[in-house]
Image (cartoon, rainbow, N blue to C red; front, side, top):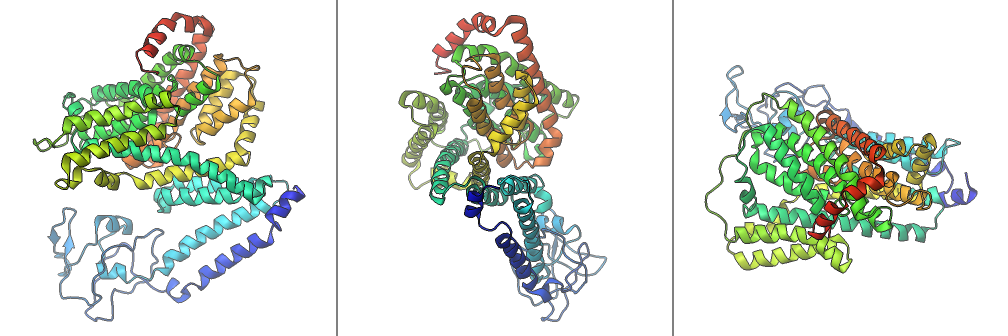
Length: 599
């Protein structure tokens, strides 16, 4: 290891070992008696004793990992009767025992894997057992990081990579770990940045400067997301989307699948994949009832695939195509001509697979009709909201300011209009209430993921990965396909940035098949995992979709569409040639550009 790096990082083992030992020791000393004390049996009904000093029946089985201790606390004295509630909230008497109990909620009942406990029972359980399990997990992570930093032969960035992998696994198994993915992502992002200095040998001031620049870029994306979600939420509060949903009368799952995917595909080329996903997922809540949530989640997954594919062929549809466009790797007409058909095939294959699954299925459960009274300014708010989203790329093209500036301008305009429309009479229709209803946790999750990725980019991990991939094959198609698949795990922005840095325009000419493949693969490859794209992350928060469900239900269709699109692009170029394809459709592309879609 470089001595300079060692001097920055300090002695390789002692501080890490001391930290880990201290953490384990503190965990063991934290209320050791209570940590191993007897507590209520899981899955069994714990009767309340009449003695005020006994808050719960004493058993010997330990709590399961992740048991929730939240909930309103009641007096520890046991009254004569306690009520149990069924899932509908109605009191139910336990005739078999001749006793009555209190159910603290469906979530606690589910996580205790058995009949309900009383509120007094739950609130009286010592919390040290939970903390021991949590701190033990942290201790294992610390030990793994220590090993990565002390084992000879490993690169200086090994602790960062270990931290990212373990954090990624915690996000994947969020339900089993029972820690919100946003908390994991934030910790992972910050910890990855703590290893940038030791991994690169950069002075402290340079690391801080790099972090400042990274946070500035991340903040633009996060505030863009906040602005788009707030505008959509305000339009929804005014029932503006009913203007669209009222036109969609079908109850066929197959028909609705095709309609939503088609809208998402073309809307993404005008807006971007992130905003399109937010808008379309909001529309789906008006078309599919909560009782048919599985169908709505599937339709939302197809929205992610279609939005990512639609953004791949438009210079403003995805941040990676925008990067390639600004960098000179692609130009508008050839990009549209060469990537449009593969993007269509990608969407069509995925939609076709899911439509086959919907064959002979029951009609869609439609949400109950909303109140007939329309909020004041419904049409105005809908027009200003959607118009403001469409205005963002126009504002960027005219002023050359980042998209977040146009989004915040649209947000401020709609905020002003709703304030003047409603005053103090209907606060729920105003922007402050919309800001309370957006998925803040999802925004923080997005921030944590981007912080971790930017740390690995700063440390050179992603560039090393791209160089390694380049050594595996000399085929542009295979290389671009692998990069696209990697973008399902790692953010596509640094991967595309690394590819742009690795291959000059002299080695890979502008508008060549390689750059078309990069644009397509980086834009659509992220659909294969729910956390592989900004659209997927937004959908994950809006529909509360977990990683495992998406991997099982949507990923196979996304992978099939992705590979079909790659094959279409390669075959298209072999049969017609890149220049011939561009020339054949240049007139159409120019007409689309002149109409304002591509600005």
